[in-house]
Image (tube, rainbow, N blue to C red; front, side, top):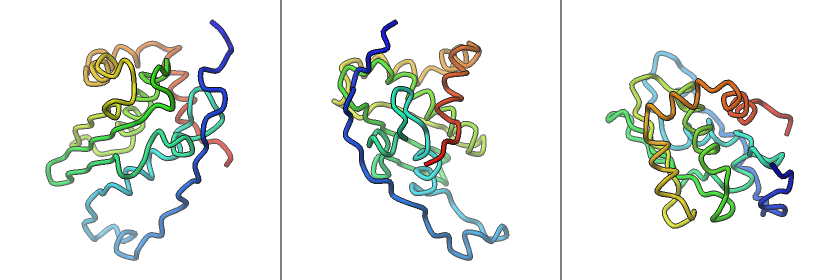
Length: 157
């Protein structure tokens, strides 16, 4: 395996910053539906597997590509790899899915897929990410799980 980066000079975007919470959002007695910004807040700090940058800084995840139907219990995420032939696309999608599975209530159905037209193998990657058995098998692989956990680990910004 080569240590050469596929995208040695990615474009870096500005981080969106912290969202200010309202008093009702902090009040545990008030029903607060999950919205697009809350999902984006969960995803923005995921680390890119190839660069010491977050998925937000690489514009792989954007708030406008997050769809939430709280009453319908669904969350949809489109992510955009930095290059059309990114070999890390499945790993990035798996990291997004795992982060949401660990962060959201079990009632949510999570759909993670590549932004249409942004990757050479989008159909194959989307098929893998949509297959519950493949995702479960991937997470049973200790080496792969370690890489996913590195993507999800907190780093100093």
